[in-house]
Amino acid sequence: MRIALVVLSIFAALWAWAAIRFSGGAAGLVVIPIAISLALLGLGWRGSGLVPSRGPHVGKVVGLWTGIEVAALIVTANVLEHSHRADLMMPLGAIIVGLHFFPLARGIPVRAYHATGAGLVTAGLVGLLLTAGERPLVVGLSAAIVLWGTAVLFVLASRKAADAPSAA
Image (cartoon, rainbow, N blue to C red):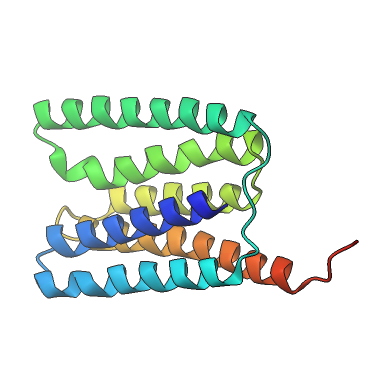
């Protein structure tokens, strides 16, 4: 789960960066999402209860669905660019990323990924209802919060595992 914590923290910071960057926020604000992600990583590592993901199939499941996700993002970006609707990339990107969490939730399995997927899909759907100027901030920060929330669940689970008496 350490790798999952790293990935969640990095992508949460990237979504928040995109929210700040594409909504016209001050560039210096990017230190806030970086600090949040680094704090979560520090808390998760300190707990040392983060266990490796279960079984050798995990890499295959993650690789397959991440490949499909990346392909869908590339196709979507190209279609939107050629349609002169690049303003829809963040909400559609959030939906695509969210959808990729559902097969991960089942295949790894990590039950929390159902909520992560639902949160990202919801952020994207809400973004589709907003004006082009509002989309980056709302979708980007919502996606970051969803990913940080999942990371917090992993940190709390690692703390609980580290505090539990071992059955020896």
